[in-house]
Image 1 (tube, rainbow, N blue to C red):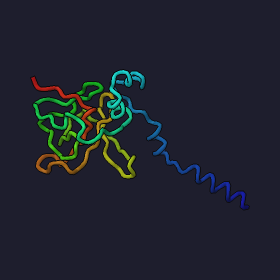
Image 2 (tube, rainbow, N blue to C red):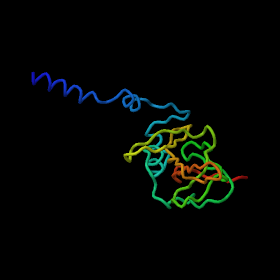
Image 3 (tube, rainbow, N blue to C red):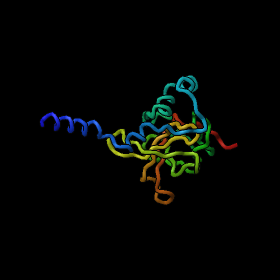
Image 4 (cartoon, one colour):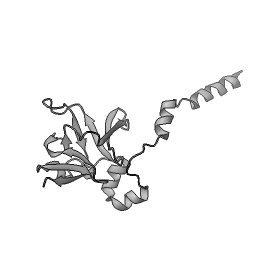
Length: 160
């Protein structure tokens, strides 16, 4: 009898992964721009690769784009998709470029639980590159959103 209880207990213990967990880890999103890991490593700097492909975070206040104030558009550093307009950029004081909105359809969203709590993660909708996270503590006069973006994930394209 003890053996049966032990076997049943072990079976339950090892079957605790829900179908949702299995699906999330097995699903691979399809993006318009698909490259191998080796191709991304060859094209991106080591820091850009770490952020865009390995979902890392750059040090705060380390990006020149944090202080960029010219008119223009912020593009994905990996695939050049326009992501944010300069008129939607604001100084959040966090040390990362921040925007109150993204260019519609060019940013994809997901959930990040790596720190033990849930955050809304942002990716380039074209190549899947990790950009940063979006929070609900942005300017109340506009959207109330703060898109907190790694500067190394962006490329600034000045207006004319």
